[in-house]
Image 1 (cartoon, rainbow, N blue to C red):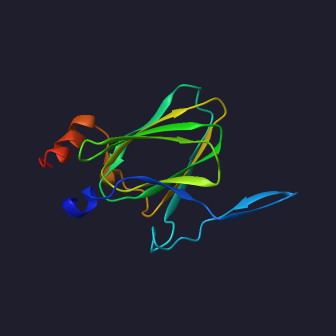
Image 2: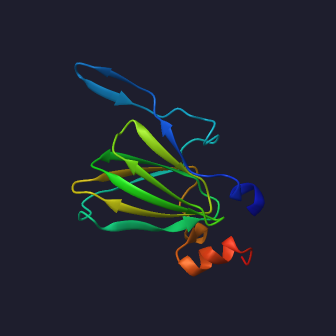
Image 3: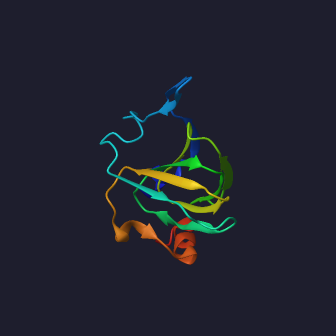
Length: 141
């Protein structure tokens, strides 16, 4: 299974929506990324500018991360060792993050992060130690 997961890299997605004189509406109805729907959502706010959140990977969970306000600088280390960088600064763009990607997110002032997940919370799905994640990189899980 790790071989299949390891082939998936994170990528940006456009969230559909409508813009009018009364504002902007974006929504999620994508069953291709999350066939069973959204199982969990979370949001992170009131993080000091320049602080980092995340600093973990998931074994099976996929997520879409959206900057609802402010700017999020996201660095993703794929299980193969490839490092990708993304800048999220619009609520109409999400970052799809498949399993086995180590994620670190730097917040700007007044940033709000929204996370959409394809699985319910499970502490057992987290890899919180960078060395443990690197063991996956070398097939030593």
